[in-house]
Length: 472
Image 1 (cartoon, rainbow, N blue to C red):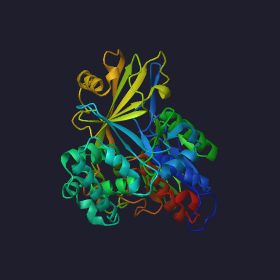
Image 2 (image 1 turned 60 degrees about the vertical axis):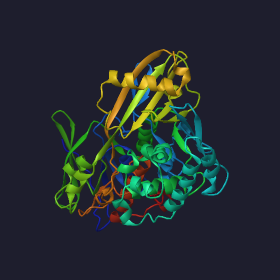
Image 3 (image 1 turned 45 degrees about the vertical axis):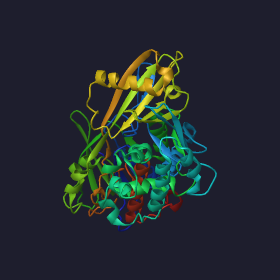
Image 4 (image 1 turned 135 degrees about the vertical axis):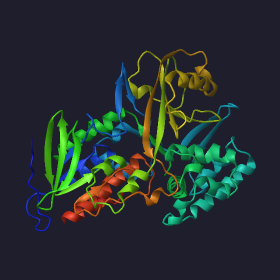
């Protein structure tokens, strides 16, 4: 089966411009919306039966389960643009002011990372002074390291050659300080410990999130299942924009057509195929899949894509027969547990219990452990952290595993991440793994889609809405 869409000749500008976006995650959905908003006729293909990429929901009995806990910060302006564009702002919660409860499992002490109504960097000073998980000397050393971070030039390529852990150690940060503060934030945002993280990416996270604007690190999260946002509301927005969305449709090959446009061969089912013709193509799939689809000569060194490593995230889900956590979330120290989130309200749980989700980043050592072993490991840890969990009944325990959840933010990764444009006219790249300057977050994914659409519109000679695309 062949479906041919008559596209514009970019040289003459005649007729409607057409585009195919391959991949229906946040990057692809963003690119499709931005192109459609500029008047381009867009076809979006996605191999899965849903949109949303690795930020999705599924049903487990009565529960609606997010595959993993995803959060954003107030400084994530592109993702918030995306929420507004798909009319999903009502489905998220954003803190009025940063407040993170942090419990030490060994001592049971509860501290907080929060901000005061003071200018940067004094907004964090009262919280740091009272932080019980560090000594007075260690707290003083944090201030000095923060000032040194603030002075780094994020445009300096040399930062990517250094690991964050070594940089912190050279500035007087003890192993306890790194564990109780820097990794508390860094592991969750970078999906790697300080010693395995590029200084460039770590500096970007801390400078932007904690040292740019007093409210930059305020935390936001979905107050509805992720599928309601990234699939439901996104699909409605795409339909309204006139995007043709093809689910369960896998791109098999991409080649230039004789007239200078592009032909995308897709598989729509067993033995069923379709050809999509377009002026431009945006590849918004993971780096290895992108490598397999790239036509020869599109990138000077396509093998670099295969050298971008991946990092896993393990999510542990526990349903108790009673309430055991009073806060929306809790960070942990001195425990295998990293972050605990209350997902009761969003999951549809009934019967008076509580559903907790543990987000375990940089989980290389645990990602393939059997569920029974993870149960034996994490239930006692939750009892250490949450006294109310002692003696509580466990109604359900299960795990979700994302073995390639993010790209690995190791030193040197910046040199491997390509920009949105390729050497092939009309072919563009998107994905959190591309050169956005951000780690692999929802923010990076949306920014990549905006970057790719901006380059594509420029190639088509169409104006960009700077009010929309400036976030990238």
